[in-house]
Image (cartoon, rainbow, N blue to C red; front, top):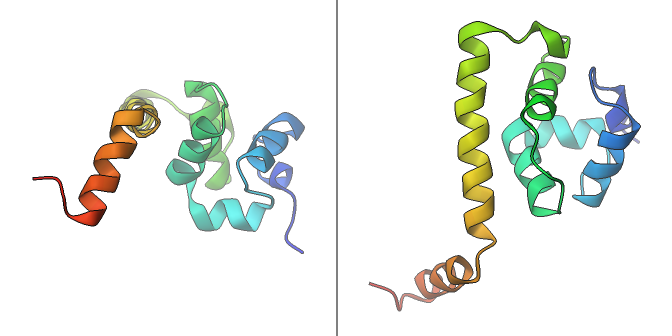
Length: 109
């Protein structure tokens, strides 16, 4: 069995529980999925997006403390965070699911 999510630096029991609700039950699974896909799953499972939580995850997967994020790196992570939050929310809209299904069956032009 892989180590718990909370063994990753910066991630505690509350984050571990949130990842479990999103279907990510181990540190190994989280590392395999990666920060952006895992955070998207958190949002889609009902966790409210929080920028500090996102960059704490990214840095934790790198083995770095959350407060090591500064300057251009932090600015770049903010752009990534905003984009994944927008994408996750758009996927949850009924019309987006309908459009995806129409695309899948080749009806949409």
